[in-house]
Structure formats: structure tokens, C-alpha cells
Image (cartoon, rainbow, N blue to C red; front, side, top):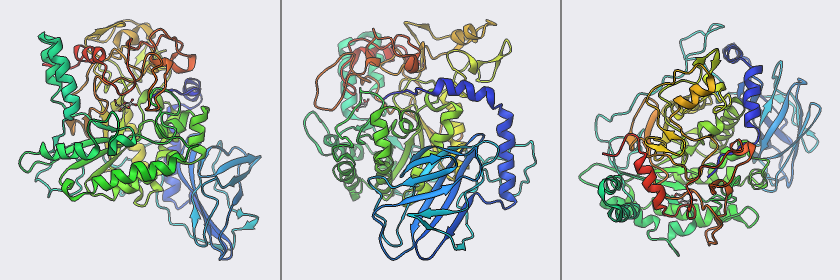
Length: 627
Ligand code: BGC
């Protein structure tokens, strides 16, 4: 797990100064009006003989946009390679990041060639490159496309948009200067009647009994009895909470060295925890993509792109998971799947790292996730949640919408499209607070907004609740149904008690100096939001269903007491590396954490291994306190 983004600090602050919030409002409305007036964001043309191309602007925001292109082979012969060309009509338009194709641009002319995995296109088949782009002035759609030198012109097709960007709520007429009413937020879901077991419900956590992993609970109770006293009693209480089961290697699914319980073993245990007719919800983490944790080292995995990793991921990891989950004896369980933490976010911000750029250019992350979503969504009692990192990673404008676009296009590329996911999760294995209780991002201190303080670097979001709400709205705007629900990993974001940086504040600071105010008011005690490894945090909100409108649950995905990474190199057969961000004596880089100490707890074992000292700190610093 990691948080890194070499460009984000600069972009975060530059973007703010050049684009005041009002500019976004006005452009949003213009886009909505243009849409309602029948302007097309999609361009389509085809010639029966060779190719048909449709180009859809899936989303647009000030200075940026996302586009999806469908290139269809309308001829009778298969292609073994393809090269798509088109010209942007305006000089301010450019491609900033592409996928499912290699994008190059010369002036306004764009060429997209196939990647190693999608050169073969059968007659009638199609490929789906897409990209994030930049624009200034206007963002017109290209009007002519060629494939392999053949103009895909001829009959002009009337496009049927699948998604209207910023569609106004039916019945309202947006006027310039007002924001179109977003799709209403769903309120907390309290089932009025118990659904038939196995039915796919809106929120799998509501009304369910939550699975307690017996192996994690036994680590906790063993530690508790050796500690004893008040702390030991608190530790024992923690053992009764639900934590996720991480399928962090093939052996975790099917069995092998060092694995105490397979996936089937956990599901059997979940079935046995049922009482009466109340369904049991078990949360699993799908976490074995090739080139895993591509921007860091601590959680590198067993598969690599270079060594046939994507094919192995499908057949040796996802297929067995799907085969096990689909067994009828598990059909009364609700199975929430957290899909590949950190993976797509790394493709948004960390393409300068070679393992991430390989995961991107090979299509391994996008295609691996699409394969997983297809297999898992086909099982009616499985619920897919896609990882959206956390506010301290993707909360800058320059990262936020590109992330929405990449995730949206990935999900839209699955068989069931937007319906293949049930929601999104933030803060997986991180420490960002659910809410900062004593300030808001745009509160003014001495004429400056809180978010302009050094600690926030102009990030739009200072906590997960505000970030998730904005993300949820952005996904609904991008075409997801309003039934999507958010999850926050609250296992370690409580920030009670005290640590090296002092204790939790109890009120807002009275200082009129912005940085002093923020440092004295924030409950996030880290010196920098980039510190992610084995922090002196505390257990946060207990697992809770439907905690707020639009949220399916607060969940404990990272089991408290399991390490984020070793504080020094330890040889192992899990593929795990040594990341200096886990070494408490290391000063990170300017980009990673402002060059501060990592604040990692010392003497940590490998990622995922039991780390009792960290567990005791998390219990002592729990907020609310464990009672
Ligand atoms: C590790 C996994 C582990 C998970 C939960 C990750 O950081 O890489 O091996 O299962 O944390 O502790």
C-alpha cells in the first residue's frame, strides 16, 4: 500500500489559483445546457467497408475531459494491428493519458496504435481505447477518423448517448449561475422486511451479522491475555469485531504454505456464524494483480506483468475465487469484495514509476479488474466495491476527475457496465480521518482557507466523509446509478489518545495564524498526509452499517495489528519488498512526505504479519475509546 504522487502538490496549488471554483460552476451549467439543447458530445461515423468509430466525451471539467473511443472493424477481414488517426478541431486540445492504445500527438493530429494485447480485431469486433485530455477555450469533438489509412466516413450515424454529462434532474430547468440539482442522495438503508436469502440487496451490510475472522480474533485474544490488565481487557473486546479477509496470494484462496485457512474455510466459518435467518456478510479483499503495489515495495506481490501475470491472475486466482464463491452452500452469505486497493489510483498519479507504467501500458490493471468484476458480478450474492484511494491522494482537482474517468471507463468496459459494482471504498489500510471535527476545508483563517495550509497543500478535501460524498456525486454524474454506496475503512483512523505528535485536540485552535490553527485543530496527528506505514493512529469508528446518507458502511478492511510493511529488509517468499517509508529513521522525499520522518512504528514485521506493538498502540489510541 502506498500514497505517492510526484506531481500532486504543484498541480494542486496551481490549479486552484488559475481556476476559481466559480469557473467550474459556470462550465458545469454550460455543459448541462448544451446537453439539454441537443449538442452532441459524441461523434460517430462509419463506412460499411472498413471501420466505424464512435468518440464519446464521457466527462468534462474546467480544462480537462475524459473520452472513450469505440473502433469497430466493419469489414470482412480481421485486423492484426490497427492505427487510428483523427485531428482535434481546436489547438488547445491534447491527450494527457491514454489506455487500451498507445497515444501520440503531433500538433492537433492524434495517432492511436494497438497495444500488445489488442492488435487482433475480428470482423465485426471492436476495441475500446480511451484517454484523459486537456482543453482550453472549447472542446469540440473530432469529425473524421481513419483506421489503417481508411477513412471511417460515409453514413453519419445519429449517436445515442449512454451518459449525458451533468444531466439536469428531470423537471428542472437549469439557469446560468445555478448548479444543476444532483441526483438525490439515497438515505441510510434500513430494510423494512428481511429479503429472501441470496437476493442481491442494495446494501449488503444493512441488517446482516458481520463475519468475525477466527484467526485474527485468536491473534488478538492471545495477545490480550499476555498483556492483561485494562489494556488486555480492551484488546479482548476488539476481537469481537469484523475484519476483512485478504486474498493476498493464490495460496490464500486455495491453500499452501503459511496459510491457516483457505477462502472456502472462511466461507464455511461464516456459514457457521449464522444465527436464525439473519444473513451473514463477509468481506474479502481481491489483492493479487500483477505488478501489485506498483509505486512502493512493501506489498509487492507474487505476479508480474513480465512473467505472464495477467493470464495467471485470471486462471489461477480469479477463476478459483469465482468457483468457490458460486457454490450453492454459500448462497445465503452476502459477500462484499473490495477490488484491488491502490491499483487504478496508481495509474492516475504514479505512471512515472516503471512498474506502474508497465501495469498501464500492458492493460494488466484495467483488464485484470474488468475480468474480476465480470466473474464476481455474475454471482448474485457478491457485491463489488472499487477502491478510490483516499482524500490525501486523489483529492486535488488534477487527480480527482482523472481518477473518476479511469475508474468509470474501466467499469463501463465490463459486461454489465456500471451495474457490475455496488459502490466504492476509500481509506483502505490508510489513516485519514472520517471527519475533521474542528474545521472545514474552506473555512477562512485570517483570510486564507484551511485547505491552503501546509498540511493540506490546497487539497479540496481534509477528510474522507467530504471526499467520498464528492466522489459519489461525480460517479453518479458519470453514469452510475444512485444506488451506489460508499465504504470507509475506519480500522485505524480514530486518532484518539496520544502519539509522538501529541494528543488529540478537543476543540478548534484559537490561533489566527493559518498553519498554527490547522496543526492545533487537526485530529490527524501525522506530520504529513503522505506517511502511510505503521502510524501511531488509533482504532476508529466501529464497523457500522448505513452510517450516513450515501454510505453503505464503515468497515475494518485492514485488520488492526497487521503490519503495513517491514521496517527493514526481511527475506520472504511472498514477493514483499522493503519500503523505506516503513523505516522510522528515514526522511522521505519531498514528493512522498515533504522530506519528514516517516513516523513509522519501529521493529515492524512484513506487511500483513501480526505486529503486536502496533496493535497495542491502536487500541490505546482508539477513538471512540474501547469500552
Ligand atoms: C499486505 C497483505 C495483507 C494485508 C492485510 C497488506 O499490506 O500486503 O499481505 O494481507 O495488508 O494485513
